[in-house]
Image (cartoon, rainbow, N blue to C red):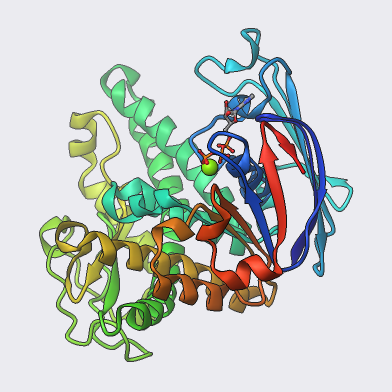
Length: 412
Ligand SMILES: Nc1ncnc2c1ncn2[C@@H]1O[C@H](COP(=O)(O)OP(=O)(O)OP(=O)(O)O)[C@@H](O)[C@H]1O
Ligand SMILES: [Mg+2]
């Protein structure tokens, strides 16, 4: 697929914009703070229904206005057209003071969606940005988000399960906070919440585990070729389920010896590890429920949920050692680029549809070898690139790209 046309109204610093893109390289060039990333943000908003940055929906409304619209025409795909509009209904103006008060409406191919989750998978897109280093350097929530976004694009059920799970956990936490004052019904209610949490939670963890194994295969391959021989590997860690140790990767790439220090000390449960083939969402659910029941008094004592996919992590290793603690800056960059390229390849292979690549200021950070690998991998996919400096771009990009000059929310 490719984005044929972008229409914005009162989005960030764009009062009104209507541009046509080409299938291939599109470059947005301009000084800092002019609105280059805002374009990528608008496109990615149509993939996941929210900003990839920290912005709340209300922050995306142009100052002085109370609503924004994004429209994308899509070529070469079953999705023809995505329109999103957001209207601020907060009394305090568009600062959104502490929350999202707006109304969002989404149309795909002219039809209104009843739920935002149904947007997932209509536009397949991967964003590369300098902040991607957070995947290695920051806490587990960044890595869970990485997995959840791609998995939701591939199967919207994952998005709905996440929503439902979060709701259950917040209800369960409210109960645990007040458990002693809840009287007779508390025990039964906790059973209900535990059953619900185990149901959706096990599916979430199962999908992430399956996906991370597949992602590892492709990411390890990319990393091996950029680094000329360093082995990238992952381990999906859950605080309520013990996944089997895997020495036998199907591809034969990755961690041959299976030594992955760092993971063991974190383990909470003592359940016997099954072999990978026997793990299903059902087996995870069974163990999860057993654990929730056996640790019931501990959760009541602490007054909140202690187990579940909200604590899971994707551990990242290079040559068998923890990348975050021991990796160099360059090794981390390479790993992160490999992960993003793997994500792109997986989206494409699983769906047969070409994802749209969004490269936010990435070439300035990459040396020649990595740039050319990125370009090779981007071949055949539509790519939107932002840069403050055209000369940073590889010559083959400059030669064939459609170039837009961005200045204060206007494009020429
Ligand atoms: N809600 C908003 N209303 C109006 N302007 C906004 C809003 N949100 C952000 N901006 C403006 O958008 C600009 C930032 O846009 P963007 O992040 O796309 O910049 P950029 O061109 O990518 O810059 P850089 O090269 O520094 O990354 C800033 O000037 C900021 O003031
Ligand atoms: Mg930017």
